[in-house]
Length: 250
Image (cartoon, rainbow, N blue to C red):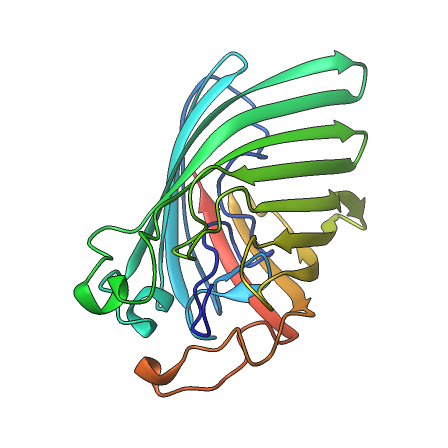
């Protein structure tokens, strides 16, 4: 990750829980979701230069196996002189039970940025497409998850074997879903890129329509995580802020 916003993608701003690996699927078959957020944050860092994003996905489950795809509009690739306005996440995995109230989830996730690489991008970065293997353990309301990058991480040079470790919980409070979260992103061989993020998200399901609000923040380097000269912006992309969203599951 260079001094542009070369970091992260996929999952909803710690807020309306975008699709992806740690979701619990109730029934076999297909499920869909569409939504919007006031800022697409991933692991605490804005992917949209602190602007809104449109998002949507599809999931297929068969027993304990699942496959899915999810997409969001983004700005960070173009801010770094690339040519992608869309992120597409492709994932698959397996969920199982170790004992009562103790489960596991393992899988692989690929972040794909169609047509992202340009000569200007290649002069400073590697291919931003990224593949991570993940594993999670859930006991009661608490989930610990580890994600390991087997490619360069989102275009950062020599960043293979970077990882993300996070801890979250889900509580029902007065009919609301309350999800506190803390995570640590380690970016290998890139100075000032590693950081801790945090969030607390409150949401409620109204028959498939799920509005949410999240407080999201990081201790990321304020000089590193900025859009950069190509975007003519020096805004800190990891600043503490409220993110609102709405998602429709069908």
